[in-house]
Length: 289
Image 1: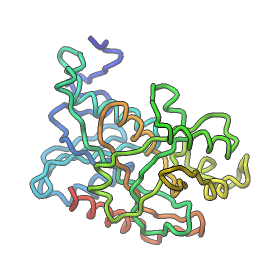
Image 2: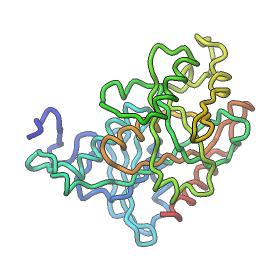
Image 3: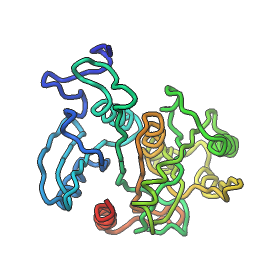
């Protein structure tokens, strides 16, 4: 039995942060960072059957062309993704009455698709592009607390990047769902996403504070890893994808991160109408589900 201090439920029986009951979610879940973007997605639904808001977590559940979908806001950062992924998994794979994990044969695998904004690291990944993440590289510390097992290629990339940047810690590298990327990401730019633990310094932005490594951005842009699978480079960065991919692997869920490119750090540009770029990605994704 999982203690009440570990599996925390609200008085109505819903899970602590998301404020959701097991029957409130579908098997396909669209996630967004901004709570206001939930309605930007659900306005395309034919009908909405359920809505709830708790802190930064806003959830709408409804139907799009006969398919039941959930759209959920997460807020920013892998610390929030730790909450979201663990609580979504608990909703389908833990019995809230007995407080026990369901038997292996009864466990469900969710399809989780992140619809997020991102900045490009490369001049040839332009503003307005839609990018599907193949590998995510985490510069945060979340995986210091979980037994993530990386493939040989993932470990090679992580080690080489650590050495290249002179980092005092090892990044973690995780491949996302090939199944979802082929289904939903077909025709999009394919790339490898760097997940940063902040928006300013960790993404190489300078306002009043200088960076410890003045050439940080150029090092990221020029990083290459050669393997039998081809050349690996970093294409964009944001603040959540590596958390999604690593927890998805550990918990057994199919996870894909889609990125609307609204800034290009190589050219110094920002999208004049970032909302339109996001709208186009939302509509394209819904049609493919």
